[in-house]
Amino acid sequence: MTLNIILLGPPGAGKGTQASRLEDEHGMIQLSTGDMLRAAVKAGTPTGKQAKAVMDAGELVSDEIVSGLIGERLDELGPDVSVIFDGYPRTGAQAESLDEILAARGRKLDHVIELLVQEDALVDRITGRFSCAQCGEGYHDRYKQPKVAGTCDVCGSHEFKRRPDDNEETVRTRMAEYRAKTAPILPIYEARGIVTHVDGMADIDVVNDAIETILSAATTG
Image 1 (tube, rainbow, N blue to C red):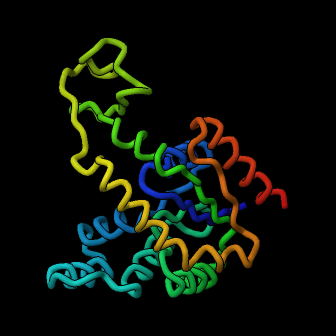
Image 2 (tube, rainbow, N blue to C red):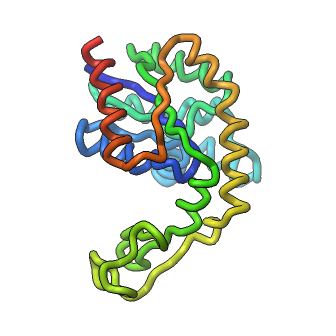
Image 3 (spheres, helix red, strand yellow):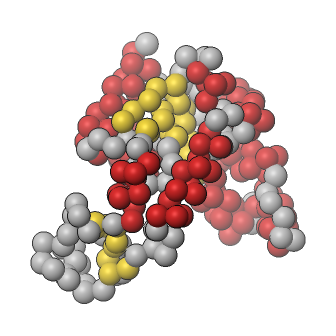
């Protein structure tokens, strides 16, 4: 059974980690609008050319262009590939567009999964993280230090880096933006009975198990 799900959660909630697991375990494909936009511009697709012209003019990419990107990508994947939408939709109009895009391809939205987080705990999680500058392996000041201080467990590098925007002010701003963006679309999907909330602060495996349970119910239901 082909599944189409939306994975919601603020930056740092673990969406990327969970999406990667779903890709590995189920062959699902994560559709991130930012990644698709960059790829389409680079590949010079019709929608990519449209988007490039808009961005070169210093303007925001329209809903119509984003919808076109999603349609192009779904057509590339074909009807039998399950997908995870990340970062889209963000408005009621985009939610309506997504319904139309899916319906035109014989698909429907099966589940909206929101990873719930506690803001203070999320600040602690994000502001403490750093990574290997060579291989990208992730670490944390409190929860995951390298086994040998100053040496990456994976590649042995001694160089580490932190994202400049991993600070408390930025994290709290992201949280406020997330709440503002999800507020318009959650009621739409809650009215359909397809929203499930998962504790995003739980252990990664626990979160994964919860998502697996949801998907299993969707498959057998």
